[in-house]
Image 1 (cartoon, rainbow over the protein chains, first blue to last red):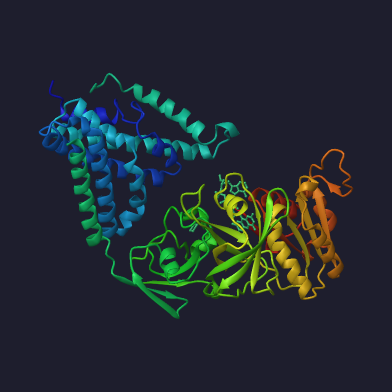
Image 2: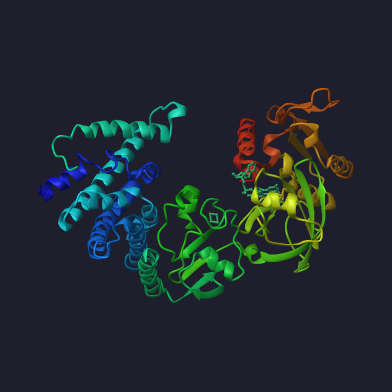
Amino acid sequence: MELNVFILFMAAIFTSNILLTNFLGMCSYLSVSRQIESSLGLGFAVFFVMTCTTALNYVVYYFVLVPLDIVYLQYIIFIIVIAAFVQLIEMVIERLSPVLYYSLGIFLPLITVNCAILGVSLFMVIRNYSFIQSVTFGAGSGIGWLLAILALAGIRQKVNDTFVPAGLRGAGLSLIITGIMALGFIGFSGIAVIQ
Amino acid sequence: MTVGIVAGIGGFFALLLIIAESKLMNYGECTITINDKKKITEKGGSSLLTTLNNNKIFLSSACGGRGSCGFCKCKILKGGGPLLPTELPFLDEREKKDMVRLACQVKVKEDISIEIPEDIFAIQEFAGKVTSIKDMTYDIKELTIELTMPKEIEFKAGQYVQFVAPRYEKSRQSVTRAYSISSNPDHIKFIELIVRKVPDGLCTTYIHDYLKEGDTVNFTGPFGDFLIQDTHKDMIFIAGGSGKAPIKSMLEYLKAHKSKRKMTYLFGARTEKDLYHVELMKKLEDDLEHFEFVPILSKPDEGSKWSGKTGYIMPFLKEFIGKPENTEAYLCGSPGMIDAVIKELHNLKISEEQIFFDPFS
Ligand SMILES: Cc1cc2nc3c(=O)[nH]c(=O)nc-3n(C[C@H](O)[C@H](O)[C@H](O)COP(=O)(O)OP(=O)(O)OC[C@H]3O[C@@H](n4cnc5c(N)ncnc54)[C@H](O)[C@@H]3O)c2cc1C
Ligand code: FES
């Protein structure tokens, strides 16, 4: 069935949020969600890298791996592409826009090891997306991830001002909040399914 | 075939990155102006800390440039880009206003103008020969290092050096750790260090289990501003374990200079096995006019003949503080102990400006 790109985009953001339904990219989500500004920085970086690497990996997969009949190497090749892209982008941003580098740049290395980025590229292959669909899915998932981390950071900043039992502070409470957020997002399911 | 393809693709990206690096990361020559008088010119791209190190200017850096100790502070008057989130946790409001930055986080990409304390120029690299290693307790050793290159060191009581432990069996890389000098600064041909073994610690295992008398060691220094204040106030020293190192140096200096200040040294330990240099402290009591050494054991062994004070240090502080406004406190040891003692000192009305400390973090 040909999937409408608009539906795919919305589904990637809400009903199939990469973080809240697939629980991918959790480590940086938990560790960088203390402040809204830093989570916004990381979120944008994830959105950007996810969109670009999905497009790049699409090209590498269908124009190199498939013709050479080595699709079983997709994991390692995708990781190489992501790592190289992140490094390259870091250098370009550092050179061209110091301001952007200082707000985004320090988060870029964190992204190389963000499994949500690899996950999106792998889903694109498993689900047989076209190029346009892949890029839309990558961008939607990036926005979804950004939305999730921003929501968590906002809640954590509020929670900081309230009393929390000592044993629950930090990661414990963040995981509980994430669980409740995931439940909330289940409310969107049924609107669109992209599996 | 598989290996070839992976290597090929990997190689292609590596080449791309190398080309990008040589084109994009080339900042050309950058000039660092230090205290408005000294200028150094170096290829840009590295951190300020590394660039200064390459030019034999050694800012203190207990974490080796990972941005986790907050020691490598310096004022950056011009250049250096905006403040980074990695620096924020280490800077208070006043420092932010004074343009203080962490040198290991700032990259040299343009001409920079910085301000550092003058005595940093005295910081040098040293090589020395270990002339003695003595057991003080079951987990503390005292090292004597005779300087060979250069042959003399100038330091102040309370300062520390950055000791370099080379690669060895249990550590795949060379590590650098801070150790306070425990000898009298009047002796400039050797230094003494007191080192407590941290279980599985990379540097202390090297010093305790691998280092031998006659070996050559390297260190940089002297660093630190945990120093005797030039006043006439009473002094109370509080340090247990290897925290005794800088205190011993201070006491020996004060003795040599015939200080008449009132001094008390409270040494906290668990059992009698943790006490050391007791004889030396007794001798200092004889030599210094107003000095008292007070060991306090928190858990003396059952059946021991210990007749001194027992318990934690905190409740005893009051007893030794005459006039709070006329008392300076010098603390050294683990951050936990320091925090607890500072809290109690505040309760006893000793103000922030009269408390000096070096946390072994
Ligand atoms: C200014 C300054 C002065 C210092 N002066 C002295 C001194 O005179 N004598 C002295 O013995 N030490 C001193 N230290 C501490 C010293 O620099 C090292 O941190 C310590 O010796 C451990 O080094 P390591 O390489 O053996 O352990 P590492 O390999 O760094 O650490 C191994 C593990 O032990 C933990 N750890 C580190 N330090 C301690 C500790 N103190 N107690 C318990 N666990 C620890 C670490 O978190 C880590 O998990 C000083 C530190 C500072 C900052
Ligand atoms: S060297 Fe430790 S923070 Fe810079």
